[in-house]
Image (cartoon, rainbow, N blue to C red; front, side, top):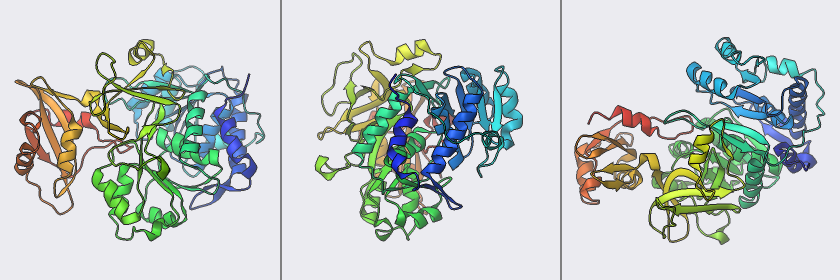
Length: 505
């Protein structure tokens, strides 16, 4: 069997640079040799447990270099990695552990008292701890094992990772990603975004998610590049480390916070070659303001838990401009189509369902065969649940989730269209538009608007301005001005929370 183990592929990127710094933290540096040895010890310990093929390793710990070694060691042992958001609480963890039945659960020491009883509902499951400072019973357990470990060979379709979706509606689903899914995406992005061994990645994202773990960390490892490894976004640390960085990946909030500080300027970005934004839409104002202040054009891209990355604005100028408000063209090896309800392709400019296929697309949802069947078309395309259109340049424009579509009085209303108009109004920082139940229209449009600091917005004036721009059925029946929008840990606006909060129109 040819080895498609993701770790083996990543290792080819840094095997000639074992003495180089792989991870730089404010406390110490870790070389690629340290990463290789640390993950080898983890893999050896896991192998000593003699777990069945396909066993899951569930992990809910704070970000640390040792947590990355745990992920890589799980891959090396041929087991399945299951990262869990650190914000999840007991009832949520109970569901994930009950559904995935992991053989090993890694948590913080502070949570062990309530995690262990949940884990032990699965007979034979063991619980170890890992702290943010790199200590814990996991480290004690692996310390007696040799660092040299022969990575387990894996077939392309062998399961590597299960990623649970955020579960904003209904039960969370475990997306099953194979080694082939992950390898194909890592290799495509390595080439498409021009990764180099002399790159320095400013890594401030969490590592329980596609963006931080698979897009950012895989990119640096495959390139043999250094990562400046920070627990989370911190404005002072970001300003401190930007001058020695060449690549930064972030959610839109990162860029908004950088722009909020007068010290952020062109000089700080002199070495930078690439800023990437994802996980949530980037406002046009942020895109343009960042370009003016830094001299750099943010690259927006589009991906999902089920597919890793799908599309990207161009990296090389020869391939075209980066256009704000779009997520670019399909990546090499990825097919994207925009279709109507009958699966017929739509012409440029018309809004429809975004569907995708390629080696990066997952095989299905964990223990949900019926849901898996439902999410794929008869001709094998994955239904992303997103709505979008192609612009005149052949770039994909996402207008929202299909579940966010508002149908009022029989008319289809796309929230993004209204949000864009509101966001462009003077004094508006951002907005969210949702549909709420309405006795006459079925659904009514409601806008929730955040003002810029020090600005007092008039809700009635916002409505009046919109009446001059769009059809009356699209104009919000109510506008609420609030200090901030509810967001999940990846910066996505929680529209389900807003729908519930403002349903009493």
